[in-house]
Length: 529
Image 1 (tube, rainbow, N blue to C red):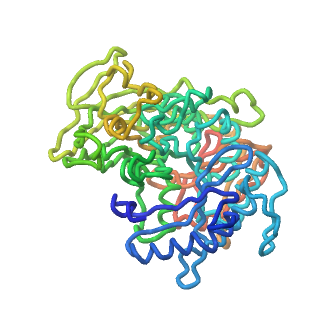
Image 2 (tube, helix red, strand yellow; image 1 turned 135 degrees about the vertical axis):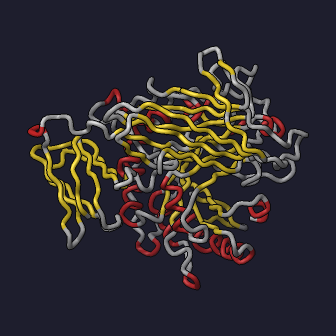
């Protein structure tokens, strides 16, 4: 806790592994130690650091899979009545290593097994804590095939507002085997690539396959700090990796959950950058910009710190950002479970690096031209880049940047992609010499010609019932696909996946009163909320 504060974190979540663990001369189930021991420690440290937000979490042993970082605010911040009963109950009900059958407080334990029990866990979070909880995969590449993409699609579809991301930039970055991703694993977890797991590091890989559906699925980092003292295998939280998340109120725990859910986060190693403004129109990371123009301008402002970072393991203490890559993907819509081949596909061919920005004008061997960013002084860089849009189509854009050059031996290939980290050769000094940042995406939707189909082909009608403020959509035949709503500025404010719907309804009480554009199956309709 003291080191979290020392390295400048504004908030952190303490995540204990689920199951049965030693305590003094006995053992205790994790639900009980969270409820009666760990949370009390957390309350003490809150008093020690009153300007910080400390959250009791859980590193869940997910049935049928591996680990996920879970948190439930519940009543954790209810003054004198603060408690962690919600996360304790969740651990008892659903953790795969919790075999306690004592039935405390009538907490009914799930009787399902494997992936079905994981589904039960997500359904419980949606039913009981739909807005104040998160379920984020931790080091998802590690071990062989424990997080296949079809299973991730299952759970994200069940709980898109709770299960909204993964830490494909793992902890254990100081360990000799970086991230503890080993050649013993033959699936995604055989190595990290510049400290990032293959799911996020590979352009057109696992993460891009999810983003190419339009799924709001975000990237984060986790220190996974178990042992950082002296020659320990871990960096302290904030010492090496940080998540920067935009929140509406930095003193409000719920605003942190909302900020994480929004996708307005970027992840950085070794303080390579400490500020990033990445916008298209009025949409930031995680947002959607809708426009009827044939192009859009990407705006990037970032800051490369002038001073030293936290590296005290070598003299490489002032890293310089070498370049930034702009990655573009095409959004084709949600994969359906019935389409078995595509539902299991964990790569796409439509995502690619389309531009590179640096302090020098050059062309790499693949033909990507590096454009010179505008150096505003004192570490600030500004980039503006226009992209062409396709009428009626959706795209997404994400960023990565590094202190490594393109085609640098042992570090990057001729396309600028990070190469595999050599197993057993990593150290704290090596990690601090190999730094990257990754942004979450901004989506862009061309609203040109979205209603070019004949009027008779429109198979739905919509209205808002004013008293309860329920949006109703009636279909002439069962419809499966996406429902989206945009405000007058073109920002997407609602997205729902419909499956065989005749009469669909959803509350729009959370949306400000006004006029919105509803988009379904390529047709649009104005609605008044």
